[in-house]
Image (cartoon, rainbow, N blue to C red; front, top):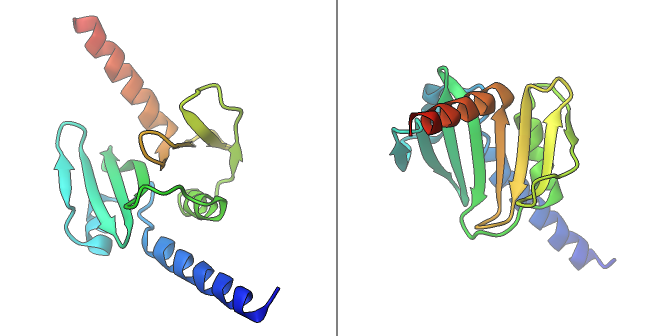
Length: 155
């Protein structure tokens, strides 16, 4: 490879790492920690207790569950896909020293999915309607399913 190609690749890697380095809201953070790190949220949905932040060219949606972030969704502003390195970096930042392992996808809407070895966290990467990485606590997901079922029972 020529030096120019290597330099361009290095510059691109530094830019990607810098943009993801700042987009690091994490599972388990409080809303106050998110506000200190990113400033005021750009929108809020009180029905699902979610807050949307913009960090550089990344949108970060956090859903607060029992006082801390129970689900976090990352999406690029230009709606482009995340690279494998970007996905890996975001998974590690949200692992809290747990290991995410890839899963076989039974859900056709998921391009890729993972679960931690202890089963407390899971993640899914979707492409439509726009590429997004969704990382969540499994007990948060289970509580959401129960709430949905209870709402259906009331109909």
